[in-house]
Length: 84
Image 1 (tube, rainbow, N blue to C red):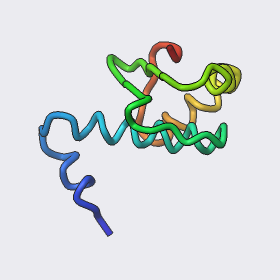
Image 2 (image 1 turned 30 degrees about the vertical axis):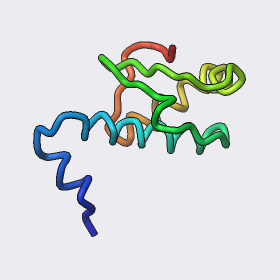
Image 3 (image 1 turned 90 degrees about the vertical axis):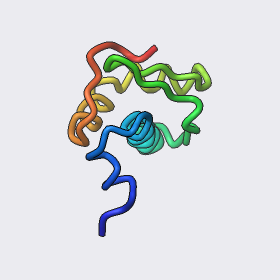
């Protein structure tokens, strides 16, 4: 079943694609670390992910960067730079 967000991804509506990428990143962070960040704690610009999460979470993601990047790539999100 398709959701409204799936339908809106096909149209050029500002913010919809960025919100979807933040949602995907939040789900993958939760799967890897067990910590669920809010959408306000994530920013994605120019294929770079900016996190405002506790330092221990950021360190855990940096240690598992290859796993995190491959999980995001399998869902269609690319990271060209490291996590900041």
